Length: 524
Image (cartoon, rainbow, N blue to C red; front, side, top):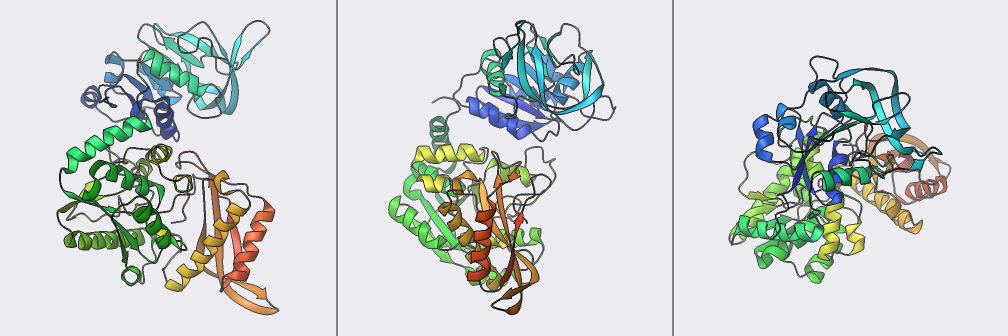
């Protein structure tokens, strides 16, 4: 079997908002990579044994004394290094060059002139001028810039505003780019990343869905042995892919538990039972725990507290079910990489907590079951590719994400059964209309939110003082950043009209146009 981790790229993160995009671009090329904090020590870098290192961008200035620097091992290990934006600047500063504030800041589209015939950029261009100059369309985001290259470096790209837009030390395979090849706005970014990862670092594109499945099956079998495994199945793509992967690996050792928390979408429980029990032949237990969850959540209105209560109730249900089954010692979950990042549970543990996920930060400190998480290091798009390879129906593979706590984090404030029911009906109307208008697969995620405020309305000539529903629809690639979807006004009017007329106790519908960041996709 191919060792998918034998050839790997190390991404050292200096706090860039694009670090996950760098990782995704490397994975899409077919090479395994990991993101680690810039405080990673020399010993840790040597132990990681990368085939290449990428230094990310970041919000700081290398001209200040207290800002982060790359470990000396980065430049002494003997492997190729690519510095992007801040990564290029700290490379230049640490190797004897100079960084200064630019004459003007550059944020957005720019064209760079590619000089010479560096292996990184040779024969890659968007335009060729009349005099034969190769030009690239790129995305810039910087205030500082390299004003003097370190010894042995040459300039391989420039602009009028940034004379050193890219630099190279070909002997040591060190490269610096002031622009961002990882973002889609840099049109030849993927080719530049392929050039570095495959040609310069010498990696082979073995990180494929089929190979990942084969590796995980072997790992799961080794990890759990003959023990029984309990999987909390939510019906979302993550837990569904985890279920099929585990079933393929250990067969009847797997029992899936679907918990009806009372916080599910309309007809969710029935759909899951039909698909997994009847279609895939997976042993599925459905637990009606509505009353248990609503009782535990009574009076709780703070998002983090709600998430932790929901996480504890899930574990209580799973422990109870495991006790009734023979030899169950493992709890499997569909945890993915973004869950881990947003819960500040990365290996360095230095990320800021944005929100706890019920299956990461929401888990209790002491658990009776050991965890198995086969998707923990995969991005959402990688999980979808695995789902297709494993035979999941397209409508499930491409289904919009649904949070583990369900509607519990879409009812703002205290959760009451009546509030949940209003939200469930409103959400179903939104999704139904998205399908009707052929918009469902054109947005990445869409849902309704129940607001615990009341608004005056007039229905049938009578004054109503009822609750408000907010609609949310976003477009994103990796769910780490997102923009609001520009849905047609006619569509929004149709959805609003249906919700107000068909859902009792709703007087007003709003549309959330916030981007992530600064907002998160979910409201809680």
